[in-house]
Length: 109
Image (cartoon, rainbow, N blue to C red):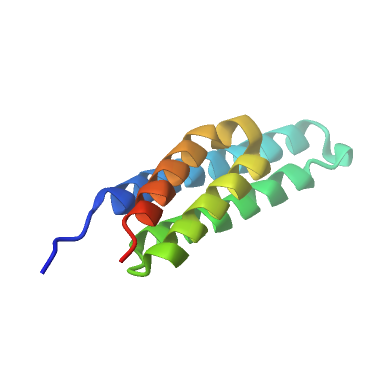
């Protein structure tokens, strides 16, 4: 019985944690900015933080899945969407999700 590769799991977990940290940073920036100017409409920043949180959790799920094709697709798509959601703060999560997804795709059964 071949031993499965654990690298995509760890890359997905680290990328997800970095994406969650970026999402909470977006929440903090949105709340901090709206405290000083409530009429400016910084709610969109908090909405993007919420979407980054959702996509980060989806990327972690992709790293855990046993089906390599589906897991790889979830990780790569989640990385791209976290990058779009929180911009520069999502770059580390994107890199981890992309590398983990490519390794997972390469290790197809």
